[in-house]
Image 1 (spheres, helix red, strand yellow):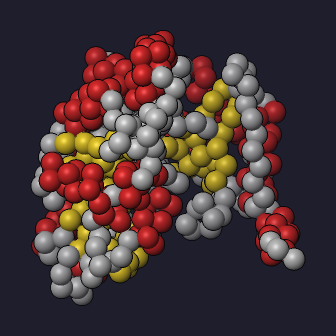
Image 2 (tube, one colour):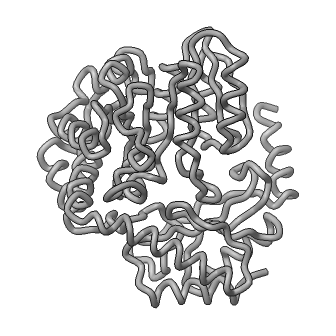
Length: 375
């Protein structure tokens, strides 16, 4: 029977407690949200919403085509210019999603015969980019510059190391300076995904590469998402102008994809300008993360110390993680639930987002609910 194998996989997921379901939320949900990636609390900010509305009224509901045909507007160009300037890079290129940006950066910068050195904890979008690239991929130990150095030493020719800047599961930061040093010893490029660093790390939220002194380097390429700290949708690649020009001509997820919707571009640009005026939002997000971690560990929970705004709390099993998250929802708290295969080490977790707009009372309430509902 066609697709009969799907039933077997579904049964296996049920036995392992790994079934995933869509759970639509209302626009006015009463739950305290510690599950989203809205790190700076900008997704519903009046200025960001107004930016989306103005863009839609001016440019319409969609980009109408690929960026190379009809999908590039003056708004896209302004967003790219201001995003590059804010993060300290020569140029930027906006994509329809952060996933598409990562696929573009990895596949276009790893031609046939090249070596891709990929961190074992990388996001699925980077992993998929490695799988689609024409180069050979070598996966190395997590957050280990020496492992990257050793892998690069086995290869002669074009090479690139690929890593998240802040890993989405535990919220730990990559040793960017060490990775850059290892790459430079072998003439390799460095591609890093700053999805969870932009808006949180660096001066005024300019990102982890900026904080590490790598912004504007001619051997460093950075991908970002517009859907987390900037509260919108889409992604971008930042780097030297010649790299961005190469992506325009070689990146399939740019060439053959419809451009980012104008409303998303308008919202992201409004959020970026707001962050420029209110840089304290980045420090507040980090402060909330530190406070969550301190309170959770004081309550006897196994929480990983955050390097940015992701706080991870270990759960005994996938089934108990799902039940724990459900019990939190029933008590008025929305938390993320990460289980295999989303976690590289097989350990299930609750994943909490530290948002800059959370009050001390909300933080205390969240910790109380998590503690009272623990398995």
